[in-house]
Image (tube, rainbow, N blue to C red; front, side, top):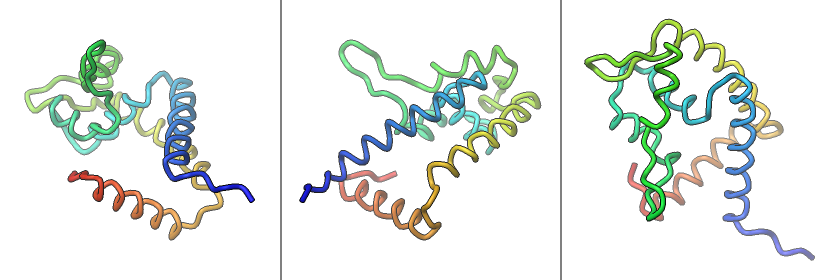
Length: 143
């Protein structure tokens, strides 16, 4: 009988597969996954780079000796150039053009999420998320 693989194997595999699939899907529409995440945060209202960094912190790479820490600012320039965002006194904000682009992308992302959860009940999905959250908190996550 085969030994079941540990949770770390499945977590890393699923994370990598989600990243790859979302990256591929979003790339077809001219945005990166980080840009999508920032647009998603900005649907709630204007935000500073610091607020955006806090909102997407788990997805930003940390600093190493060879590579400085990634920030949201690294992903905003293209969105500003595309006129999807504007830099206001309150922080970065979606423009009407950006809101329209987000709404179109939202449909693509929803289809992707449906595929990821295929064959999983809403209760099973909720339980999986709750278990992962509990594990993260057990390991010191306080967010």
